[in-house]
Length: 289
Image (cartoon, rainbow, N blue to C red; front, top):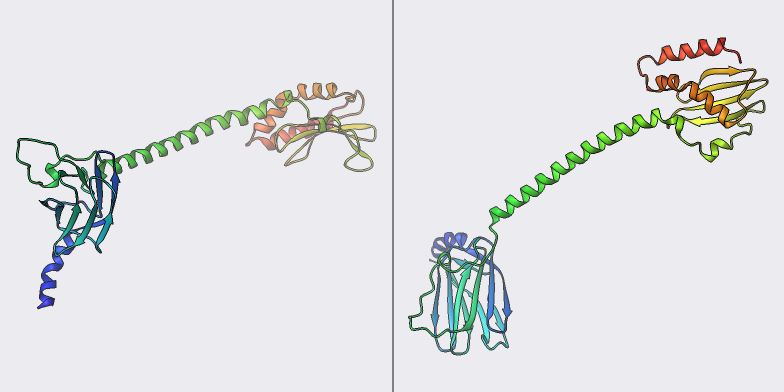
């Protein structure tokens, strides 16, 4: 017999809204009891009144165990939440002339029980109706929350795309500018001070200037001659000097100035780099200063 009864009661428990928690807010003019459900509560709320107790019946609502809370408020002395068969009973011990107002949040996940002094009225007190007909607390619906979430994600994605686009547009001109303005960049202290032999006992570096992160132009002294060499991925002899060799940094800068266009063509060229190298070799082999 018990098994048959449980069989008929099981479907009711599956559709019942489970009470997750309750919070009590003691104000100066009222006491609010906020109940939170795991699913939207759509059951019927009923109440019965007496001189010292207000009984609230939440149909199709369940709670795991009984709860009892004693208060020192002038509006409510204690509240007990008890699971019953097919509903949950809330018993509130209150002083005389205390009335109950119940309202449900707009999304159905919350129920507010307000205990406050009764307002004198000539009308008969209305019975507690279904929560949809009661005054609703301002609570954002879950659909609105989901919609706001998707809007924020979309804005973030668009912002990331714009940042990548700006970064690409900014980095390209800077790279080109670095290649074309190498001649006018100021020499570092290390480049100006290079005058000691660094390659071997017979070869010394007279001047040096960086063109970019991979290439630099070096003036090497070997014996009675000086050699202008492009050093980087490939070491290329650009020119050689027997007489009128550059003595100062300004002389070296003047030589680079005269070869500015040729060096730019070599650095920026990807298809005809072999032809430029061959042209420099032939020119360097036939030039005398």
